[in-house]
Amino acid sequence: MKDKIRIASGQGFWGDLVDAPYHQVTKGDIDYLVMDYLAEVTMSIMQKQKSRNPNLGYAIDLIDLMKKILPITAKKGIKIITNGGGVNPIACADAILEVAMKLDIGKLDVAVVLGDDIKDCLDEIIQKGCDLNNMETGEPIANVKGKLLSANVYFGALPIVEALKRGADIVITGRTTDTGLTLAPMIFEFGWKNTDYNLLAAGTVAGHILECGAQSTGGNFLGDWQSIENFAEIGFPIAEAFPNGEVVITKHKNTGGKVSFETIAEQLVYEIGDPKEYITPDCVADFTTIKLEEIGKDKVKVYNVKGKPETEFYKVSCSYHDGYSATGTLTYSWPHALTKAKAADKILRKRLENLGLKFDEIRSEFVGYNSTHENLATELDEDKINEILLRFSVRAKDRNTVNRFGQEIAPLILTGPPSVTGFAGGRPKPKDVIAYWPALIRKTMVVPKVKILELK
Amino acid sequence: MTKIKLRDIVHGRSGDKGDAANIGIIAYDEKGYTIIEKYLTAEKVKKHFEGICHGKVERFEMPNIRALNFLLHNTLGGGGTVSLKHDAQGKTLAAALLRMEIEIE
Image 1: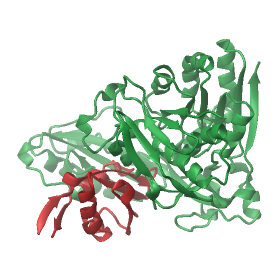
Image 2: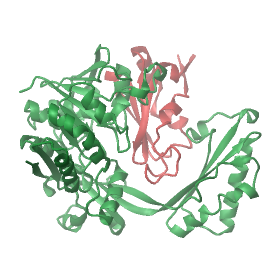
Image 3: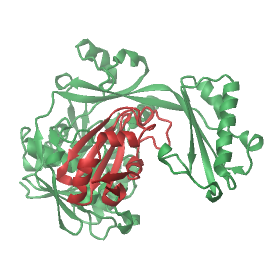
Image 4: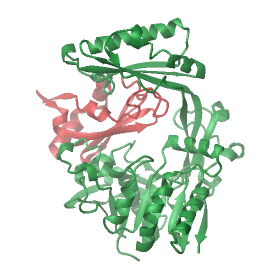
């Protein structure tokens, strides 16, 4: 058994710094590279791509990335774990193997984790007595079933552990919890049992710290952010994990950013609910037991984590089509920028009303004044406001209604308050509104499958 | 009575959980935590976000990292993917909470 492994976070979301994984595998030693690509809305986008082309439906960026890092990870023996397989992990793995073949990488085992996509067997699951009601609102799934675009179970670390046991160099999953990506190599390397709840919780906490990339190393830091050095070359987090569950969060030397009590604490509280009940498929971690200690420059020890047994359920994330929205913007300049923008807002609302258009919601915001803090924004001295951007959005079930709104923005330039600009790029187009449906499913009803694809 | 600017004693981070926003607030030191634990109640946070938070506010304590976590229900205009809000994910709400001033004895 190894006495320590180094797990590096390479992506906090699909769209994160493209070269971050490359820096993680080149600027120092690591054993594992983990990358989270999936947000709730991502799965529906991927389903749409797959329905148009059966070879798509995964994080396509992975392929260019593999061209760059595979020669390095293969040489150094770094294993890669990612949920970038999206709704088509096999196509993703095939594409990676093709890259490996062209680069003459040699032997490479790519594992895929399947079984999370339950969109095509929903009827069967419901028939077996699992209602899939919305876990937040209690609504029955029948309300949205005809509109569903995707339905995926969140698997945890265990299928990835199985893939690693079977010799995988790269593990490509579909919907897997972000924390599972980081926990899996710890379970595999240290032989943790699925009843070692404190250890599983420790690995889960490490996963939570890594899952948003540089948000734990100084990015988006609300403390003394101006003290963070070299954002331009910010280092992504690395978890040095030990068999007893202690983890040291750090980053490569000669990178920007900062790892401190404060930067880690901010990430710990990010997007959590009840800190005593951080529920994952692997365990329930108690965030109120975590201890943090700065043990050196850019080194924070995370220890004392306690956990409880996992629940009997997996979380299911469904997405469904819920109408259309569009946003248009116009910029008004000094003098009286805010008054002008407010007048334009009124005119626009009146015109939409005259047209008899029915919207589910109309929202106007004044960027430069109240678009972030709304009624908490302080009043401004009009004479000191240089400019205001009017951001006007609508949402409706009917596409034509939203499209008609799009024709009303540009005319304001010639038919409303003066000194207005910033209308470029054409009319705002209706965009699909994808809503999200969280539910629970008994673990006994879905079985994750691991398949190894080899390049010899 | 002394007035304290919350921004002088805490930092934090916010994000989305469906239509709820979460705001985690961390005190810079133990003294700061004693203050927020006593005075930064769920009711005060609810009142601060009047007109923004349309549901209940839950408060959770994390003394181990000198933090309080607030869940603000019915706050994000229908949630990340449906919301028309410029800040649909509540990313700036931690900063909005730091605008608060609290009176302590």
